[in-house]
Length: 460
Image (cartoon, rainbow, N blue to C red):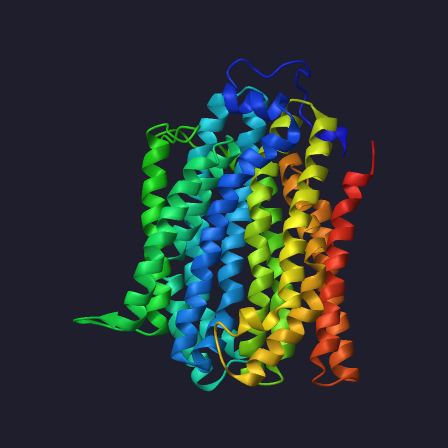
């Protein structure tokens, strides 16, 4: 990596006020430290994946139109999660980690309030934009009839509370930047357990409580975000998260700039990543709503790789960020590659299992033969290269820790170009050939990993 990107700092020892977590991150053996930091994140990500799985199951009980509607909204939901958690959240964690690595605890504390302001404003903006543009957006993606109605009902309920998703992930990012992975994991996992009960209650009703259908699924998620935000905010204000949140502290332009300098580029990167899925969804939607429903179920496996990657990735942001802040450049490089190998092994294993047994996943949600066939084509073609997806995601997070996002942006644009150009060619030359389209999706994931690897292979 470019040495000029690193703040000058002593190379010998961590600052005296960095704390025990920082000392471990700067000096302890890389692999056990990375695993220890990643484990709580992986637990919460798996819990959220379970909630996602059960929500898909509940929505599938409503009908194929509801599944198709949820498939239209799902890329936007994941976009919000990735922008707030891995995008702006990555900028927050990176800034906090580098401040602590350089021994500036006061700056790390001040960054917490700036994180709240940024995520609150962006959350409100996203809520207004998506609710206002929902009908046109989902129709543009190919939604029509009952599928479009389901998409709007689900989207309006969920995005009414999406500001709390942004705040929840922003507050979690502050703690993770300080190396505190456990507390956010406990809060978010507990919230998922609440969601597992609340979601079916609101969808189907119980006793005098009427069922609200797919609207209930969206409201359950909004309630989960609200409760988690409140708990995390109180913990930080009481200095229980490794950093202290003081709502009366003065705001400084330089701290906004430090977070957004990484966070906005990271958020833009997530837009490109999700736009890639939107482009794929656009092509598949041309073949019919039942095929779209099956594709939506299949591609959820790919989206599940994002939480798995995030589990390792948030640990990478903290470890790479602190080591770069302390001037330990070669250790940061080693951390990045070890993290990439672990992430690839995890996502690759899931992908191979999904490719070998696609109906075991798809049959859990629907018995529609066409939907299952469409999802199986996707999984058999794309899932075997999920290991490359893991490499690309891990090195993206490592680049956040450095504070330089040029190569991740280039990687996502490359993936988008492969999908857009290749998808157009395949659908023109081989109309309705889902195998050809899915082959393009697989090639785009390989390209993502290749471009993201470039700055970590160049020694300067």
